[in-house]
Image (cartoon, rainbow, N blue to C red; front, side, top):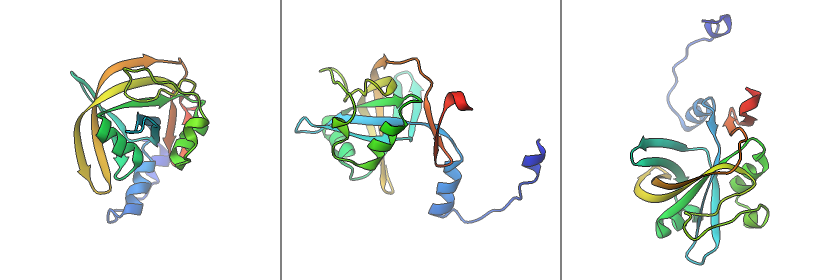
Length: 174
């Protein structure tokens, strides 16, 4: 154990939303943009750092999205979505899709094939998983959407973008 770690004072406090947020900020994670299209054919998408693999067979992941978001509503209606895992040079895109800017899809290059789950962010994603919704679970103000991956597209060989301690970092900076 390092001297730095030994100097940390152990304190147990109630699990309030602020304490929980602080705890989770100390758990760095990759950054993705979850995309789909609405019933009107318009693209929908939002930044999501709550992405997790679930099982290899069938290949399934989960994303946690804010209940009531237009992206979530479109995913539940359409039954498909794409998870665009962002590379280290895509911090501006992560921030743009977290902002709720209604013009975000006009500000980044994207494409969508007929068999894809949602728009692919062609410049900013290192890998994209096209998924079919296999289960949904609501808890609190979020919804966990399980997606069975049916297509995986490797776009760039760049390292992933990470988020933790309320900061973006590149894998190569670690």
